[in-house]
Amino acid sequence: MIWKFDKAYKWLSNFAPCTIVINGIAYPSVEHAFMSAKSNDVRWYLKCTDASIKPGTIKKMSRGILLLPNWDSIKVSVMRDCLNQKFRQEPYKTLLIETGDVFIQEGNFWGDTFWGVDLKSKTGENHLGKLIMAIRDELKNEI
Image (cartoon, rainbow, N blue to C red):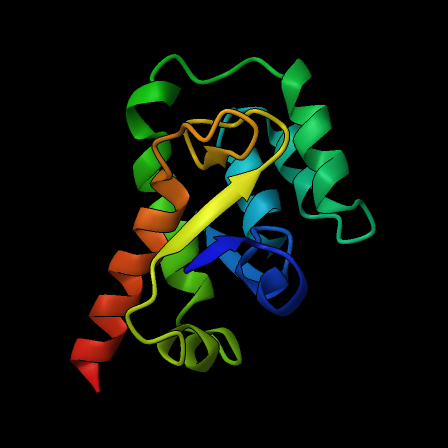
């Protein structure tokens, strides 16, 4: 089981560098792209394209933006699109396929029980891990 996206599995993190394109705009990581999609503000999109701004900083900055009114209903599909793009790029594609059938969990200590599993309470929906495993299955079926 991959229980946390660190050390040998840091590449699974949304902070890992890769090019993600949404609506013709290129972003330097899944995190940058995903956070950009939360708003219709063009200035926000442009800020999210800046590779000199770390993914964690973009994540923190996103807390102050006006969310799309339908964000909760589209966020999983937006994440799936971003992850699908990431894991169709090398080296991520090969790395993901090489995990075989191991269970992937986005374990964290910051209390995220939607995208991951809070390792303190051992609770969470692990949507990120589930999406990554589904993409892995698709990639394996394409071989």
